[in-house]
Image (cartoon, rainbow, N blue to C red):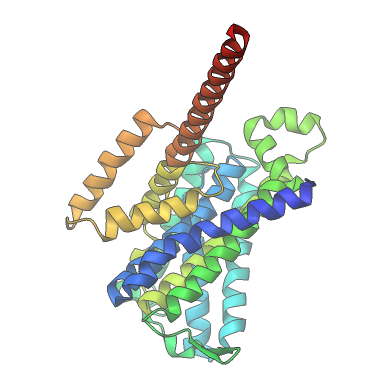
Amino acid sequence: MTASGRLRGRLQVEIFWPLLLAVPVVASGTLQHYQWAVNGVIWGLWALSLNIVWGYAGQLSVAQLALGGVAGYTTTLLISLHDVNLVLAVLAGVGTAVLCSLLLGLASLRLHGFYFTILSVSFAAVFVTLVTNSDTAGRTAGLLVDRGRLPVVDIGGLRWDLDSGSGGFFALALVVFMAMHALAVLLRECPAGRAMFAVRDDEALASSLGIRGATIKILSFALSAVVASVAGILQIYSFRLIVPEFFSFHEALLSLLLLVVAGLGYTYAPAIGAVVYVVLYQAAPVEGEWRVGLLGVFVILIVLFFPDGIAGGIRLLARRASSLVGRAARWSGRSTARSDYAE
């Protein structure tokens, strides 16, 4: 099988994951389950954004939600204050977030490790402080988001209402997640993605091989900002509201925990993170801070028994199962050979 054939097969398998996870949501058909699923998809996108910049390129940034907030506020303000077309406002929001991410990327060239992480925390704190104290941004009350601007799409006679709470908006979020997920898989397999992993593992060695670490880092920040922007815009349209609380340090820490639990660096980890969020944060029979405590216990257990996360644990168990099957097959073959010899 050629390399392109293997990549095509892998893409089909990777895209199949989100579709499979959507089956029970569509089967139930309740508004609550659709909303849970939309929230899960959004948190899967937050994890995907973080996975690109941290899991792929090794740059631990706590500013991903803030970048999504930049895109969200830019989009909302352009529409509410200047009546800009939805598509143009979204593109402007994504572009603004990418520009901010490039500044972070340039800072990562001078600061490394813990110091850069502190810088990203500071960036997020400054952003939240600015919008919290801005009259234009609505302060702590935030701004209302008009989801009625989302169009109705006709596909082969089928009417797709993107504003519908009974599956239409969930379908939009799922399609967006599948597209971002496919791009992440392609990124991992392309030369730029392999260069990111090389820089993450040993930047000095990567540099000796001709890989420009500075360019790769800035690229990872820009790509992760695109995903973060999409997540932020989907989130505000899901809640029909944008408030600073969506992009707080608490929420950023939650995205870190979800990615660590799911499996840092694995392409299908964001989908696993989405499921973990829905199960532990949405469907769990506990309220308030107990949900945080439940997630904390789960994180401790995963880190103790599966240091590479759920995705790493699945891979390890699959390898062990394959090894056991291989040993059983060899033992069976030897037993058959001995029986033939004895006869």
